Image (tube, rainbow, N blue to C red; front, side):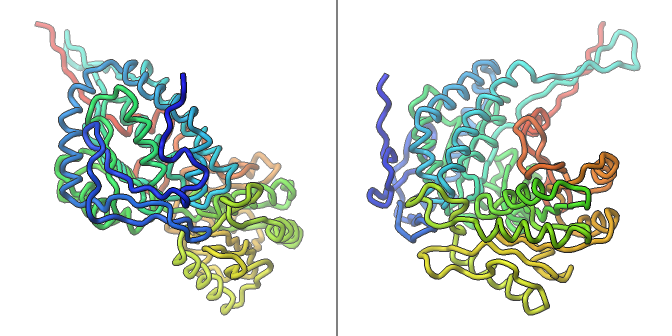
Length: 493
């Protein structure tokens, strides 16, 4: 069968900028007057425009989702799963073009963009497999001739608000468990990286999906995002992004006591002990720091290394950071990283590094914006001798900057690692199983990676503690985030 041609089936959106339209109740709406410009962070070229939706558009989308939900819930889980598989097939058929969109609007390197698209298709298929695995419980009653049943039901209408750093994968991470469990969705992509989501809507529109089951509205956080989070007919808000935005979403949802699922920031510590394979540790930490230009919430953000191997690890990391290739991924394929997503991010990270240097931190590699390139490029940066209370050690950097700090013991490393407002991911490098078990027992994080890079699996459970979020995603436990329990007391007469 011949593949359908779409507006985004081109390697250069800059040569063919697109005006996108909201997808509500199974059809694309006329474009409103207020539009938001989308540009390539690597070179500033305009790629397209999306609707600057307001509460009126959100009201329409939520109403469509509410109308569609009861009939969608009545469909069998296997039928709903079949839709996810159809979407996955569409994604794979268009993988190259979808990856090209992500490269241009987010600045992701080509290889990682391709991984993101293919992982998205795999994730849709994985969640579809849960159709026959959703379980309840039979509970022993205190009363004779009574059976107690605990069943699971969909929550209803889910408002999904997406981040910009893995924009395409997060579509599936929120949509797939919501749809297979019988919910309907109103989705808002980040205004920084929305074009891939509107391309996704094109693919959904080609399927026989009931109108209103999936709705996509463009807009910014303060207008469109707030309208979703505060809407009285939205039953759950699922958001991935920064802590301040997550706090605003909680405040907006509080008026209606709408439940929230929040994956927020991180300040992941990497602990390297003296008995570690230093080559392995350096490679994995480097990979975890420069992937997506450091713009990943579970990336290694700070390193605590035992003093006797501090200099050796720093030497290995400095070589890797100095040899990191970067530039415009839409112009060159074989890069390690691309630009930061905005010019403001460059300014912020420059300020964080400069502030650390003024307090005595040593800049081993990098440390500056790369002015030889157009766009938002910051040099891969390695710091040592950083004060523990410096912002680069305390706050989420979200850029290619890695501070390293010497410690005298595992106990000291764990204490420093836990001294944070975040609690998403952590890692340790050692060949001693006792050290591994001690770290896993005492680290206050939702995930700990042992002798490997920080990157979660779809069958795990990606969840943080403290200000890193509420609830989680992936696997069985992530699926059940989109369901509520119903207890039945069945008394024989």
